[in-house]
Length: 507
Image (tube, rainbow, N blue to C red):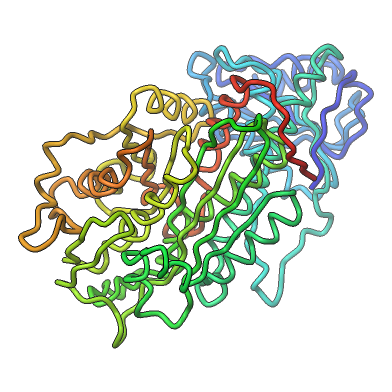
């Protein structure tokens, strides 16, 4: 699919389909009014006659309309004008793209970015229209023996502006949307791959390919390297699996020399059976998504490299399977972490925190400006926040505000949950420095409290994406979240970054 920005008069737009909006009140968008005039009032007649009610999710296709050069006109319902905000705008774009895809035309020109969306500027509207369009068009069918193809596949989408003075901002938004969308697509693809293909070794190869294609530096630590470093909690999770664990480090050196890096740490459990604390069989297939934290780090690294962000950025991925077996870690075992702190394993299904704690200790060597870990960590977070918001825990108020703002900007929101010392008591152990679980009450919070014990030396945030990384049911599949949140967080940091002599090269 090709995306572009176009400017020009509607009467000259010879395309398979032109897309404009209609509000529930019957009010036409500016471009719809222009088309109505060209058609001699046909559009307003159809709206007033009840053929198009303008409700959100509605649409009407006009074919070979007199006076209009486009082969088709797609009228998209916008809902009530007073309620037309970010969510409604994105829904309208998504609806438009899905409808256009099914019409059989090779190209489409979409005029929806002309609509006012609160205080959002044109770059924001185009960036998010691009992201929504890519999401609407996404298919994961590479493992199917037969792939259905439309008779005339949609090949190009243009977002249209009315003035040449708007082209620069629109192109900037388009470039960012394509970059972030590419990262989201990578995260989705990795998440959707089955665990027999997407192993820790596969993730390591994917990281090497990213490094080769986008000028990143990469290092992959093997089991022997982890043993020398004392990454015993990570290795305790890997003990039951025949797949070797990998510890992946990717570097984007786009910032000024010597500037402290932002470090992203992604949980990479490529399949989670629960280990000896075996999960129920129902929906266990979805545990292939337990590496979506790792996928989001790879996706964000790709987006940052494409945008050549002037930041020093490091992505760290501890990757392993969690399997039962004769060598697997048992409930009651006590493990000494890389930090020297000891952990009593009360439940082997609380494994994500065990691989993350060693990774969080490892990243101290980078003297980071901040560290953000991303993990499908707790079912408790799904109970707390559902599938709408990711859970956010942080030891620094400024970083908290940055991430919350980025989530709103990205329409990939997070919600802060407490990280109070009151919850630490639930992790007490009679035999070790801490237990790896704190009971059912406040499960997502005690998991974050566990991680906080390994992050005392730097500014840190934890994003629990257990409820947002994938969808279940009929629409089952990875969402690519929170790549948009992380990318917008980095974009804002890039604006504030001092101009330096970063040597990053990106394709």
